[in-house]
Figure (cartoon, rainbow over the protein chains, first blue to last red):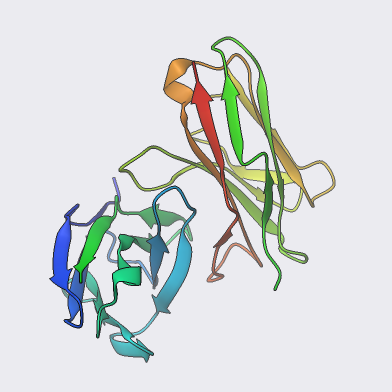
Length: 110
Length: 114
């Protein structure tokens, strides 16, 4: 069964520091990788997507993909209290189905 | 900004009752998804439509759940009868197509079954 694994957390990071969120996946044929942010009681909101090996930066967010290691990460620089949320990793497999991780809860401490 | 519309936002019902959720995807989006999300878990795909056709309903409990997208635009998800274990967030998402396209979510419906 295809799986996406995330540490459930909570991950506690001081305000202004870098938050690093990690995700591993089992399907080597996966081509697209997504990070969604979900505030408590709200629906998931797309933060970043990445298709190619390496880094992709968007403002304070950087997605990193290593297909050989089947590993994708999200870095949040200059973390703010408003970044406190659950971050969901989603991987589109070789059948174009989106496989979801259970999410990592991130807490930014002022 | 275009968005996925869902209603109602909240629904409280008693077990054995029928409930229905409605979703209107972003205009032009051919693919529509219904997910169920239990607290502390990732979304679980219940059903996926391509236009008006079901392309994946393998995880839909068909004895009590049904979904339709008759004209290939808006969609309804129904539960009859509701059970206590159905309490969850029901999310609708849409994308341009099935391939590499990004899924955008509506606000969701929080269902509580008493």
